[in-house]
Figure (cartoon, rainbow, N blue to C red):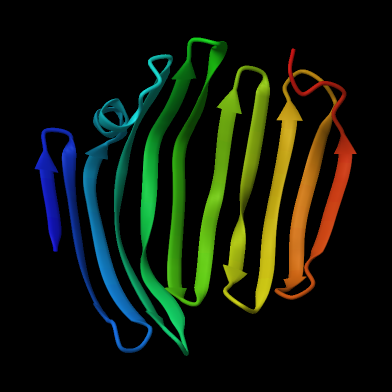
Length: 168
C-alpha cells in the first residue's frame, strides 16, 4: 500500500499479487491531485508547466486468463505550457471509465490556439474498437476526421478531410 497526501491532493494505491502465477489486483484513488505539484517534482525541463487536477477511483485486475477494470479517472482543467509554444494546450475535462474489459473515453475537446481536437469512444480489450476523433482549425473550412472501428485483430482505420497546415 502506498498513500501520499500533499497540499495539492491525495493518492492511495493498494495492490496484491502472486509470484507463482500471473495475478495482480490494484486499486488507485486520486483526490484533487494537483498536477502542477507532481510535474514540478518529476520534470527536469524548466520550460514546461502542467496544470490540472486528477480525480478518480480505478481498480485493475489481471491474471493469465483475464484483464479487467472498474471505475474511472478524470483530468480537469488541463493546461500544458512551454516557453517554445505561445499557445497552451488546454482541455476542460478528459475522462475515461472502465467496466470489466470495456474502456470508454468520454467525448473530449482539446484546444491550442486556432487548433482544436476532439476524440472519444470505446474499446473492448482483445475484442473491438469504436474510437472517433477530429482535428480542426478555427476560421477555416478544413479539418480531418479519424475513426478506428472493428475487430481487435484487424481494425478499420478511416481518415477523411483536409488540413493544409498543422502549424502556423
